Structures are given as structure tokens and as C-alpha cells.
Image (cartoon, rainbow, N blue to C red):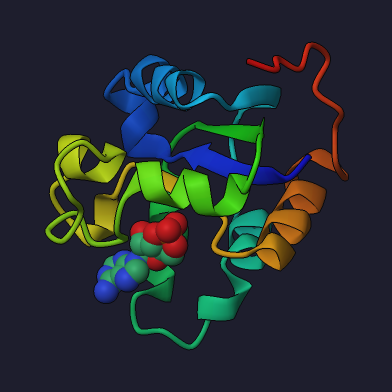
Amino acid sequence: MEQTFVMVKPDGVKRGLIGPIITRFEQKGFVLAAIQLRSIDRALAERHYGELKEKPFFGELVQYLTSGPVCAMIWQGEHAVENARSIIGKTNPVEAAPGTIRGDFALDIAGNIVHGSDSLASAEREIELFFGGAVAASAPVHL
Ligand code: CMP
């Protein structure tokens, strides 16, 4: 079963949105395989967003990600990467449809509440980075 990496970013944690975000993933039918509330140091933030290091906003992005605890999760389900991105919504909250997480909870791209892997390869890389590799869901639910 496919797994994807999802992270509630510091502003989402500060605003008390871990619960509502988990609820949306559970309601969609995902199974939570792993979760950790943790801080991220500069080195991990730079590795996580390594593909964006030439972007003008890279410094701001790293600063934002290291500004407080994040909630890192592995969610499991059919087409996990695509389904997660569909409930998270477009990167820019201005374009994210109402009913998506960013459409309902975020105002601007620099503080878009949550990250979700954009491909299977990214999911594998990010799960390795944060959890040291795939973690089997302990109680998979088949509805
Ligand atoms: P995320 O889905 O975590 O993946 C890359 C992140 O870069 C993205 O969410 C945004 O938080 C951030 N990002 C993308 N474009 C911009 C931008 N123009 N200005 C600031 N941050 C951005």
C-alpha cells in the first residue's frame, strides 16, 4: 500500500490545527502509520527543501520551518501521494479550493500550513529523511 509524507508546519501547529488536519486524513480513509512532534534544525530543513535551494524564497522557507515544532506524519492508503495532495489543496492558498486544507485554513503561500510529498519518489525520500524509512501501519483499516 502506498505511503506519503505529510507535515503540519510551525504555523499549523501554533494555531492548533494538528487535530483538524489529522481528522481530514482519517475521514478520507487514510491510515496513520507514524507521527512525530519535533523541531527541525537548519540542516534538516535545507535537505528537506533541497530542490528549492536556488529559489529566492529559500532562506525565508528554512527560517519558517525552523521557527517552531512541526508534526511529521506518514499516511498510508491507495494512491496516497495524489489523494493527500488533493485534500491538502494547491500550494498557494489563494488558488486552493474551499474544502481543501489550505483552502480552508491558510491565507498565503509562505504560511501554507501543511506540506505533502509531490511524488512517490519525494515521499520515499522525505519518509527516509524524517523516519529512517517506511514504517508499517500497525492497524490498517480496510473498509
Ligand atoms: P510546500 O508544499 O511545503 O513545498 C514547498 C514550499 O515552498 C511550499 O509549500 C511553500 O510553503 C513554499 N513556497 C513556494 N513558493 C513560494 C513563494 N513564492 N514564496 C514563499 N514560499 C513559497
